[in-house]
Length: 140
Image (cartoon, rainbow, N blue to C red; front, side, top):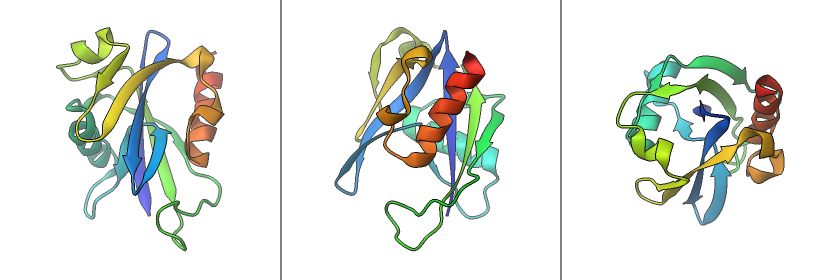
């Protein structure tokens, strides 16, 4: 299973998502599953539009899973996740930039976290946890 995520970095903070799926609360980077026929950037932009109403501008590859990870929701299925980093989104971004917390669509809540205070244990999934550490190293 292939998934794609975006890390929007602005003024030393990264946008995170709190959501509930399949009866499980989680904190993660915004993004999700790639649909058949999509390229990675197309899937990233679609996921971000669906979740936030925003589209990443000039996403740059940050990380692709380099260890085995079984899907938390589909036992027996291997998960590969691709992460992109970006600093701008297409408008309307003002509400996300000004608000400490911003309700998303459906059952998601988006919030900013200072990268300097970001700890891997704040994120639910092992791949996101690794990416949090990579982001801290990159932005240090």
